[in-house]
Length: 350
Image (cartoon, rainbow, N blue to C red; front, side, top):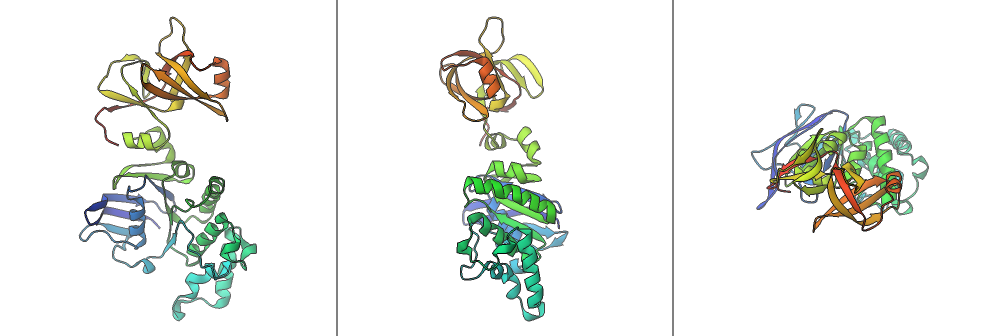
């Protein structure tokens, strides 16, 4: 079931939440709406679900070519999972999963045996088949979120929408559930859109990432494409760590074309920490002179902060092996070379 949104505008009083947004979610894909708070991603998700509607005279939502813009949420065939589970505390796990089926009108309601069978299949699907008789308070946060997902799937939705599904969980559980959701999506193949502000989450599990900022879409692409080829300064800054280097710079490369020197003083070079090469400062070598200010070597990657000139601090990432070979200490003088970068004008806005 594909999802298309065309020219979606949404205002709340004088505040613009969405400004002419276009969206295309392919059938069966897992797509992330990624952006900071206030970027419009949750509003867009709620409009897709039918919990909000575009401003009058603007916008159109299509499910597999069918216009559902003015269709109520309950008739769109959408499964919605909230950040805080929204499970009924007085119901067992099985009763929570069955809820959407048991409240249907009699003519649309499956038989009790059919409901029980579907609940059992869903509990097995989310790997919690032994917990049907427990209550939500007897479950961990990760288990509750999987039950919320099973409940959303019980009504056999056309699309699945997740609003910050792992935001209330601790880091370890969140990582485990991310891996589980990716495997789960591969098994069931339902078109899924999830909202997150966690870049690692989006890049790890999504088929496609839609980066939003200031009520608009900044870039759409695969996780690798948006990370390796950011279209705007905002995307570069939001996805991972980045240095903004003042030009001119010796030992510089822009994209795939290395140049020994650039004097484009009206430009800013965006360079990720791992795209900088560190050399011991020796006569005859080309590069920018800097001094080591701090070294953090816990873990597999060493993170070094260096000072270029009087006030330009730059972050560099090296492997532990590279750090050992360089034998660096705080205060050492080094040379920096840029392996890969992207130039933007100084008047950019983030």
